[in-house]
Image 1 (tube, one colour):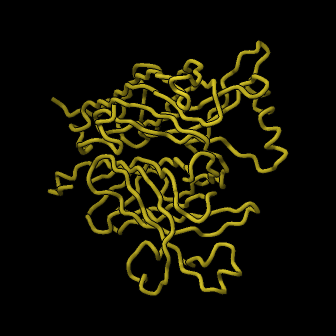
Image 2 (tube, chains in turn red, purple):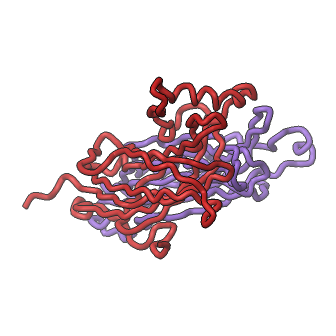
Image 3 (spheres, chains in turn purple, red):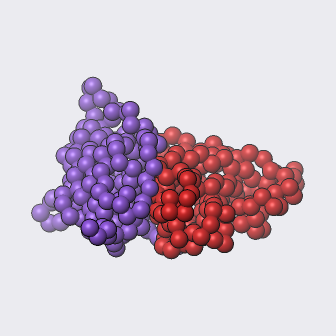
Amino acid sequence: MAAPSVFLLAVSGEIESGEFPGFDDLYCKFSFVYGQDWVPTAGLEEGISQITSKSSVSPTTLVWNFPIDITFKSTNPFGWPQIVLSVYGPDFFGHDVVRGYGAVHVPFVPGRHKRTIAMFVPESTSRLQQLTSNFYFAFCIHNSAGAPERAPDPPVTIPPSLPVIRVRSQGFVTVCFNVMTKDLHKLGYDVGQGPGPQGLQQA
Amino acid sequence: MAELHLFGQIESGCGFSERRLFCKWGLHAGAAWTLLAGAGAGQTQLDDPQVGDAAQWGHPLDLHLATKGLQGWPRLLLEVWHVDGWGRRGLAGYGVCHVPSAPGCHRVTCVTWRPRPTRRQRLLAPGGPELREPAAAAGAADRFRLRTEAAGTVRLQLGVLARHMGRFGVAL
């Protein structure tokens, strides 16, 4: 039997929750970013969660519990998929503004992993722009029907040659991944063993 | 040739004297190593943390290396810089950390240092003295010339994927 030239990566899991002090009524969008050698073969590449709020039993944590399930195939680990998250919430006028962007690589060690991702928003350079920025965001992501449009893709996976980008980190999102791979070992790759940095025991 | 993939993030920096920080990073490796794909150097965003004290960068790393030997194992040279309210840059710390050799996901904490300023330098310069050739910090040869003091720590998540190392009898 000929040696395989393609390997598969199957990821399932949940976007569990977010911590955004000072913000409430948030929803989250996810998408995957990957290199040229990667192709998604099954599952959803993008999604929008429900709008969630803090509650009496959870006064600081916003819970989405939003499932993700996708399979990729590839010939090369370079460009390993990253999940990109954008969190939005209402401003004073009720328009949706971004509350955070963040991204993390899908883990490559088979097993269960939990990742906490820092979420940041672009910071404007002038004080006046800071005051008016919420209004601008609201203007550009609303269409005439009143429902929020898809905002531009967040610049979280930019190449490093661009000049300094100023951001403010203002929250964290926790994501749980279950990772399965097929034929990675047959192609000669060694992914190591053991729990990821945050341990398998965290449920 | 054996190959090494490095995936991960330069996650955050904390414990520095300033909070608004960004990090410049560069990969240094011996002559046996070749960078096949991915950027070998870069710069994170400048973060002003609103939650907690750590500057959050979340800067993704994706490098594909090939090697003919084990000498000169790749290491990351990190330079942490702070930017004050006036937009002036000053050095916060230098750090070197080797890419982990064992395949798998690793949480790495890199301690950093900066050249110790004299009393006059402390009064005059906003950030303190900087190395003229930061790449010299990546090696061990010239360190004895420096007088340094401790700075903060940088947290990285580094994932290592190795290929064909077993063919050459290498145990990682």
